Figure (spheres, rainbow, N blue to C red):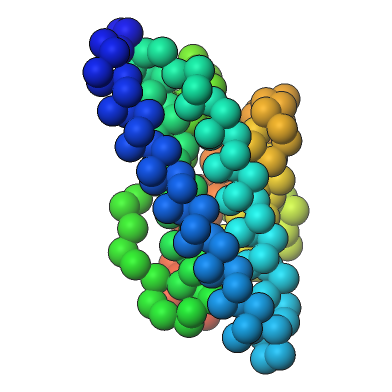
Length: 201
């Protein structure tokens, strides 16, 4: 459904304001990280620096797409992407400032890639992962790897395969969907509180 002129102008102004605010916060967080992390937490610094630079690149892409938005479905997709980036920033900022992470809404990855991936529905790749060992293999991990390492590996792979990190190239989406399914399968099977994840016989 097309925007009327007034709604279109309001949406663009609100989005532009949020983007500008997040850019400012990202720059402040990077300065804070350089001042407080370089000596004691250098490995963490390089990780958050890379993450904040990725956020900055994604915001530039969203700004470019904002100019071309003409209808409500496009606006919804772009707003979903910005919300996802805002949540990512909160994760990095929490790590930089060593404060508890804010309680975030749960992100349904299927919905995210449907709305943020640039258009039509992405066919679901459900039911392909049939065992814990297969899920570990898809993520390139050894059977029995703890859930914390599973999450870290998933985030690293997903970040590399996401279209925003590939200059809009969506050719890796089948692999991205598969690692999402593997991660969700392991989340259901493993408990974070366990000291030793279950191993298959």
